[in-house]
Length: 274
Length: 125
Image (cartoon, chains in turn purple, orange):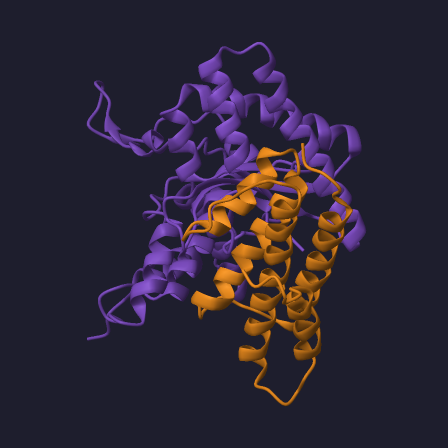
């Protein structure tokens, strides 16, 4: 017994209704109906599978080599992403607004028990028109850039960086904090007024051979090539600016503060990267 | 401190040693940095003595000398001595620290600069 497929049955019905049409004509007609009437509906209401996240791809990349069978291969995930995006683009052309709630299509009206498709806002003619139009070029997928590029803020011409030990020190010593604030202002003024391109590191160091000798070290790091003489000039200018700040603060200070400032001045050293 | 020995000879030796290929370079460069520091340090100490600034001759002599310059408004010398000292500590104790020929040249230039500053001192207030 020969089995008739749905295709055979449709072809048979179409031939009986169009006895003068050849088989090719009927097939062309069926393809046209499929493309213009059926496929747009199918595509529009197709429920898409879960869109693989980039983390899934990264996870697949990192684990795939070790556990090949357990995780979907990275390449498959990438292809699936591309396919889903393409189908979504077609669905949008057919009037899909991206809301998956629209997929509840069939319902039974109160008047009859016939399943009906709710009327769409876009007319079938309009849908066909959109569908037959050449699809817009899809935006190239940026698979290798999982996150938007972060544009770093423009680099400051210089940085003054306080070491962790120094930060802890000034947090526990309000006098030192106030003095260093003035020193920092002095350094910034100097850098700005002379257009120096230098970074400055401020650290607290204990001498290796005399551990009880605690020093405040301000390390000047020129960012542009300088001759030795230029470096010595920069070094001297920083030293004068900083020591003058300390002397200014000592002018109107009480005896205890003066002593503290003198001690600070003794333990303060400026280095320059040679 | 031996008054008869001229500390500048350490500096002269350092400059010869710096380019003397007869010796293994890493040991040579580390020795150069050490001699450069001691040349300047001993000159600085002598200058303090010559100008009437007394410093205690004990285990903290290096601290006393360097701080004496900071305390007497000669911080440019103190800064230079301390930077040389830091490099000398690296050269003598920290075997992973890099000490190159470029370092030797830079620090030789620095030691000359500080020596000149010391030589210019006539009195210390």
